[in-house]
Image (tube, rainbow over all chains, first blue to last red; front, side, top):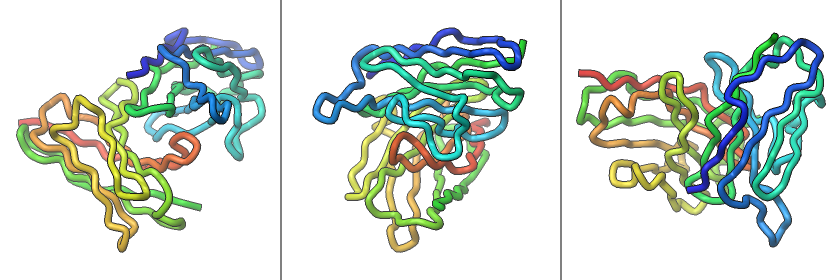
Amino acid sequence: DIVMTQSPDSLAVSLGERATINCKSSQSVLYSSNNKNYLAWYQQQLGQPPKLLISWASTRESGVPDRFSGSGSGTDFTLTVSSLQAEDVAIYYCQQYYTTPYTFGQGTKLEIK
Amino acid sequence: QVQLQQWGAGLLKPSETLSLTCAVYGGSFSGYHWNWIRQSPGQGLEWIGEINHSGSTNYKPSLKSRISISEDTSKNQFSLKLTSVTAADTAVYYCALARDGFDIWGQGTMVTVSS
């Protein structure tokens, strides 16, 4: 199985400041034939199912605010919230869909400082 | 816009069979991968299996002996069965559509296994 490891486990950031969450996979999730990273980011708010924010490591889903961005390739990825808003308080997960069993990171809890 | 609505028994005794169904509304059932994911209380997300457009399945290896995912294309539904449940299977179970990542999720069903 591909192990996904996120850091940090929790993060407190002031409103309007930048939040950065890292995700590392135990093997590359870059498919060489199409040069795509099979890596997604999700936001889960309390009592809700996860919401897909970013696919293919850096493609923002329709309707997701542009303060959310994803970057990275191969085994190292980053989710950045450029200017934290109150509604961004949530748990964030990375996930690889390169191969089954699809696996998620353990989650990063993002809070307001 | 595709929506998923799921249902099934929420309270089971150890050794019983978990059975959940997910209905697909507002989109084609064919051509995609339909998944089940669970989340134990206070824990992270665990993918447990999928069925694809050709009816082929993939399961999490540790659950393979107990899990079955099937589809009913005439009803635009797919289902999960997990046999011989234990307390470790207590979780919120989600169905999800996978296109680019898991982009559409059901509302979740809390399943509790308790004697």
